[in-house]
Image (cartoon, rainbow, N blue to C red):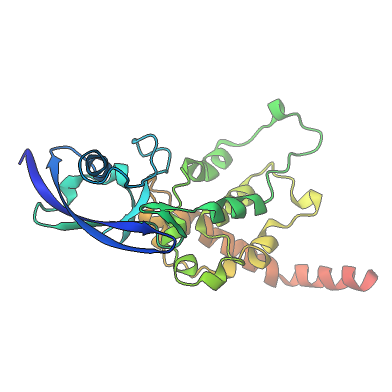
Length: 256
């Protein structure tokens, strides 16, 4: 089938409220949902607000929910839906609506600023860093993140509990902490920063119950839960309940 008319339901509104609006729109072979949204803008709803940039699945701008599932509009092909299916497009539910499909994701940038950056090792110039290849490869997966914030949106700790947001960084930024904690040249400990302890005490690692919903929606196929969050949890627990660490804390606290 080279072209057909599809039924779309698109959320229209702003911070004060809104509703789903029905459209019948042409679909051509090989198109993605973002193409259809652009066609709606061109032919039926010129004031429809949508955020997008690269249309190549690399900028993370066009995040939305399609039939209730967090997705990138530019990477969701129309061929995955049947011609008879009504396709519902709504804004990310975890974040405040600005207008139509555009949400205010500033929560994520605030959380990013709360994560201490890489601490360079003393006495080693940047060009002289040396690492084993296995240590390079292990956190490299996490650097594929395009910050679409789909993982943040689908995480029920953020999505369903507004009261948790102040104390919970979300999977994207817990993954960042895990990446830094794995880095063999990160000198955070020497600077007095315990990344595992702060992950638990300041960034809400304990709120995560490893449902893997963040991994399931990641467009870069990063294994957020298995390769970042679970190992970070294991290291944080080992650190907290290690009897030698406990004894050391008691001794140093007594000497202060």
